[in-house]
Image (tube, rainbow over all chains, first blue to last red; front, side, top):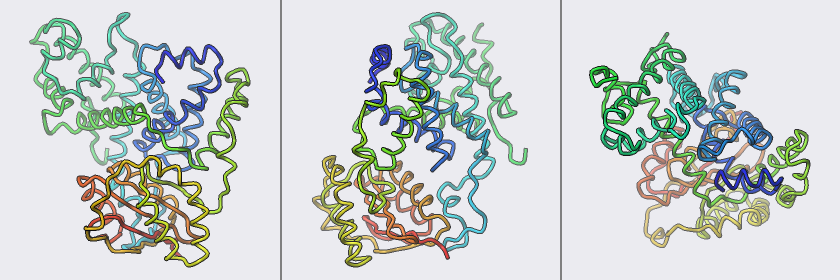
Length: 199
Length: 231
């Protein structure tokens, strides 16, 4: 289901859209929750909150991004709220597997600083996601950043993608780096989003 | 702004975001997060959704109730969908299952399950089969050559504080690595974890994950494992 169909069916009060969208929503929420190490009941709580935000506040979807991207942005914000409310998942002490450790920690092998790194970056991305485009019809910073990360292009290719000049593409790069650095400083305490252990 | 205003540090940072520069851990973290997001969105958009488990169906019903209470769809949501899945008998609790499986893999799993726990579990396994049959229709795996390969050691087990939680997390990780895992609660203390790996490139990562979790798997999959609640 694309965004246009979602909006059309929501406007028509077509309740079957719930059944059609839930499998998609579940995959998105489960994926986002995995990034935040949220499982079990907490993940179910997130799914419930995301569903309510998507189906009750559906008019906040403007159709200017993919439906799945919008749903992921909601899921990320709800996961962040859940972490703020309940903290990080911490395995029970005195683990009981064969080596006396905890299976969860072995699976994820993640230190507190790794988790802090993950968390601050997600907050940076949530803030970027919330930024509107500078001009009507122009791509938002988060969209350009995503394309850059996924395609590893040259600046010339970025210019072609943005349908602009090389100089304008370089300007855009600078603006994106500046915005990311500012948010990294705000959420990670470091302008390149680095987390220093023991900070 | 001119080229001169793009500092070297900015350029390195942006190059690291593209994966072309090393030693910028923050940029690596941003890149990893964005790639995880893209992978999740891509998978969600790709269709091919498995039938809801009884737990998922029950949760959907709960969410429907909440949406109705919130006034979504002007209350029409109550008549949408149905409760058929939620009313399925919950004799054995299939906590998680593979996204794809074939007849052979499922038959092998139930054969192992019944041999492990005796006649009572065979009956239980048969009742579970009803709930899992739908997965068989999704078969896309060619396991024709599997009879020629060496199997992994059977019935490897670990004792953990919370087998349901740890098992569910393992299933997620195994699926993310390209494997297929099914977790079934056998009794109050034991959970069976059946792991197959249809993609050859996923075998080593799945093996490494299981070994990290304490399962001494050797040889090629499939693996039949037990998570036992620690006393």
